[in-house]
Amino acid sequence: MSILNKSYRDDKFEVHHLVDEEHHGLRLDQFLGLYLDSFSREMIKKKIAAKEITIIGRPGVHKPSTILHHKEEVIIRFFKTKYEDEFWRGKKLDLETVPQIVFEDQDLIVISKPAFMSTHPAGRHVFNCATVYFEMKFNQTMHSLHRIDRETSGILMLGKNPKIATEMMTRFEQDDVKKCYLFIGKKLKNYQGLKEFTANERMASPDEGLKRVVVETYPEDSNQGKHARTFFYILEDFDDYVIGIACPQTGRQHQIRVHAKAHGIPLIGDKLYLGSYEMFQRFKDQLADEEDYHLMEIPRHALHAIALKIPYKGQDKLLMTKIPGDLKQWIEQKSKLSIDKLEEKIVETVLKYYATYSK
Image (tube, rainbow, N blue to C red; front, side):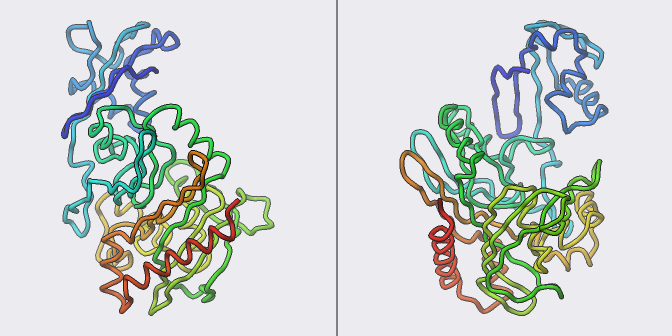
């Protein structure tokens, strides 16, 4: 399905689709299902009934069973609703919606993505997205070169044109990109207290359906799951917590979070791996209880993409960010650590990692 153009306002997003030859004869609801793949059939029907779908040149009321023809234009509208809001203890969070620019030239923009901002529109998250923000700002298409989880903050690269997008995505596919993440973990009984260690547990999602979001680990010599490797550096160890740097060598789903749990330091705020699938669902449905909030401590998992090194225009470019405000606040409240000294340790550790493992 071809996208002709997109337009944004603060409260409305429109995307214009061309009916390609291969989709000639499809029902309207089937056609919409190709783009709205996270929407249920009932949600699509409600969207049609709410007149949020327009077929250009077709007057009257559209129905889910309306047959589409080659070269027709279909407009899908999204309106900003409460479904994109985030809550903590029943109160709406005041989200950061303006990304910090770390680096920019005529081809590339690198940002420090705020927590809860999506990389690009998906599902109910349409407005608070990195690509949307900069498409509105620059009035041009932005290309997401990679992605980080919505709750994860930190370094994110966006391309300003298809050529740089293809080049940079190839770098990611060929593992030319080296990333480091800051994390805060909660110590469990199986934490061994090592200052540096490598996690090699294999990973897979053994369940189907909704529970496929949960990733499990298997021994390194197992034939189950896929190979995964993460280097861990513990910067601070105090009370029930650790603060560290994690550098993934592979790109498995939830890799750092899963490896951290496997080694006894699941991330604070991690509803899946410090909590459970059931707790994750309670937060999703806004049914979390006081015990859930007490265990999580903060509204999102404590993971921040703090550094990235990538070959760019003939040289290795190292990009770094600072500790984000919410994690800095937690550190200041929970410890007697100096933020300035912690920042120095972070830089030293990142440089040590890149000096050891860069190609």
